[in-house]
Structure formats: structure tokens, C-alpha cells
Image (tube, rainbow, N blue to C red):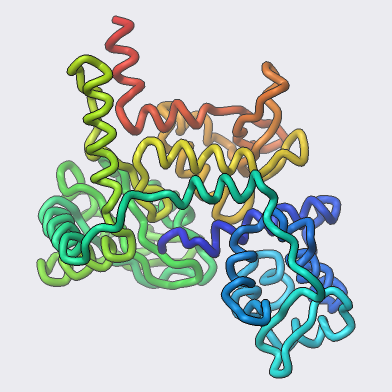
Length: 384
């Protein structure tokens, strides 16, 4: 459902591992492949840049990482999902070792420190506003949940095919139902149920009609059912859960930022579209946080002229593309998403939409973000 830290970190380290093996994706479940993949996770080269693994290692007094966590790594998961198979494959390794009951793995030898630049970026990312008082946060969640219950539709989707992602759900539903504004999909990977939400204004009739579409309502050729959550108590419970998982603390930051910008502009406020935050992949971002996240993905892939994104990074940048004013045109014949060298400005990198036949088209993530926050509209107004 929500974009997790594990998913985000895993796709980064798995992408690097793919590069280190010549760009080949291994799918056969051989002991050698499994050993090579796990040894890469614990290699000095990866650990120097992997804050998440470093954190997990530091949590255990003997430096072990749970096998359960390793099996969430995309590349390893493609090879096997059986902890016993991994433990057996690592018996001959001189670089990593498994504990007695086969439930944990650790590096043999000393763990290298994080590279200074990586540590500095992580430190900057972790800087947040002072913690909100528990009662104040509960009141804020309750208020947001109550407002969402009044303003937004919630539908439950059932019968989803195992292995589908939120992007599959969203793309499939777009074919059978029109949505005014943004549709949010709340879904956990590999689950067969999900929830979709949008503002009631302009969507109630279209969504109600879509719910009666029968076998036309499909995701990856699987017929699904779409049921409205119209009982106030049930809807309130859903929204309370959503905001509890993603506390709406960004509102305070956005308000303080807006005050600073108002003073800077001599009292002229920027025109905003809807809320002062946007939600992508289940996470609420203000303007600065969203730009920072996009920049992090770009800077994480400097190993080639064109690096195809995978996993949560790909999903996230597809969501950013959706914000672009020409998203529909740019998504035509899309097969993937990549980071690469800007041909016009070779010293810079940008995002590309990969298309059928090996074609690619660049797009401005900043333009999409500016559009989502109403800044592109302001630019046009000033130009006029």
C-alpha cells in the first residue's frame, strides 16, 4: 500500500547489483547466484553507500541481519523466497556467515563506515521538525480523517491478481472510469485487495457507474469487484488508519514555508492547487521534500549513460510523470523509466521515458512538480 523504507532502499541496492553483473537479470534459482547476490549486499562497495543495511547491522549486537529482511530484496526474491535455500547456498561463502538456526546473516570481518557524502545526505534527509505532541498529533489525524470522510470517495477493490502493483491498478481503472483530479491507490504489494480514493466532487456518478461494469472491470485480465465504502464509521476508520500510517505533519512545514514565501514576495501569495502537499505512492510530500526525493533518485544512478529504473524507484518516477502537463503524450508506448545523460547538456542527467523500439523521450520532473503545486500556472499568469 504505502511506499515503505525497505522497498525504497532495496530497489537502489538491487539496481547496483544488476549493473555489477553486466546488466543481466538472473532468474534461475542456483546456489551460486544466491551466494553472489547476498555477498554483494554485504560487500564493502555496497555497504559504504547503503544507509539502510548499515542501520540494520547496527541494531544487532553481533551485526546480523534477519533472513526475512534479505528476502524482501527484489533480486534475491527473484531467485528464491525460501530462507532455508539461502542458508544452504551460503554455507560455502567466505564473505558472509549464517547463524546456527539459519535465520540471520552477517558480514565476515569489519563493516566499513558510510561514505561521508552518503552519510551527509542521509543526515540532511533525517532532519525534521520537532516532534509533535501525541495529543496534538491525534487531534490533527482526527481532523484530517473527519474532513476526508466528508470530502472523498472510498471504494474497496477485491479479487486483484497476486503480484500486481498500484500502477497496474491505476492504469487499468483509467480505461473504464474517468476521474476528476487525482485517484489515490492504497495497496500493498502481492495483496488481492486495495482501496481507491478521490474527491467526491465530479467523481461520484462516474465511479458508481464503473462499479457496475461487471467483467469489464479488470486488472491484468482478472475481473475485480469495486464496492463503495459509504458507511461514515467505516470510512472514518479507513482514513484514520491512513493518516496514522502517514502522519500529516507536513502541513506545519508547508504553512511555515508559505509564510516565508509570502514575506519574500512582498505579501503576494503563490496560487496553490488544492492542498499544499501531494501524495505519491502513499506518501505525502510538500514541494521541497518532493524535489529532494527526485534528486536523490537521479544522484543514485550515475554509473552509466542510461540506467533503467526498477521497483519502487520506477513506480515513484512514473507517479511524478503523471504530474506533467503532457503526461498522456509522453506515456504513449512507454515500456520503462530511466536516468541518463542529457544530450543537450552532457554534464547533467535527466529522466527518460523508455518506449517501444528502443526509443526514449526526456521529461522534466521539475515541470511536473511545479504543475502539481500550481507554480506553472503562476509562471503563465506572470508572462501574460
